[in-house]
Length: 144
Image (cartoon, rainbow, N blue to C red):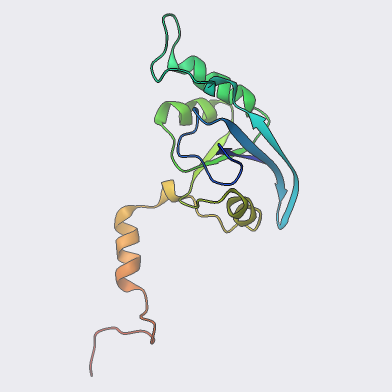
């Protein structure tokens, strides 16, 4: 399965998906990383943040989806709703991560250890932190 990660330098995951200069595309299978290529992102070529006359953001999003059309998953630090829907219409799943390094993201994904942080309920996260065992063992607060 092919996965894509937005990157400007090939080392770090870029903070914005559609304005990134390139995508690292890796062919991964469980426990294995196959071929890796870097694809230029044509819509990123110093476009103004607002569309010029006659152009819409949706056109830029579709151009990105075209570049990634053979990928099954896009892994990014963040993504807007319109871009997410554009990719979803193409059958491309989006995984959000706070991992910063591209190599680490690819490795964790290939091992099925990359957590999709867009699916974490903040209340569940707080609950998990509050009920996690202390470093010295489990403390339930009961002294008897």
